[in-house]
Length: 103
Image 1 (cartoon, rainbow, N blue to C red):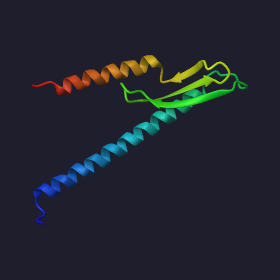
Image 2 (image 1 turned 60 degrees about the horizontal axis):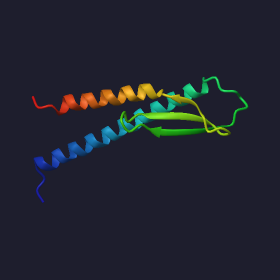
Image 3 (image 1 turned 90 degrees about the vertical axis):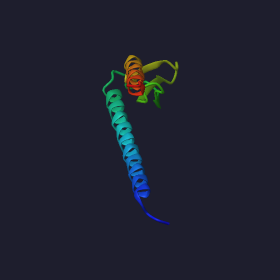
């Protein structure tokens, strides 16, 4: 098989995909570190039994952390706040519309 410009561009696309995946992983790791640090600094009673939950908000595609009281099931703290996730989701949608618009 001949190796021409098509195979070179394919390698560039594959390289860009790997770079994008690496950046996404780094972003998630940074968000998780921020969430854990915020939860460690929160004002929770030391004797409270809690359950932690990590997730990804679909609209904003950001990692969030939640701490629940095990006895009541009540949400104790969330980082980042629901309002911040909602705003990031709206921003992401609006930027997507701008980029998809025909010029």
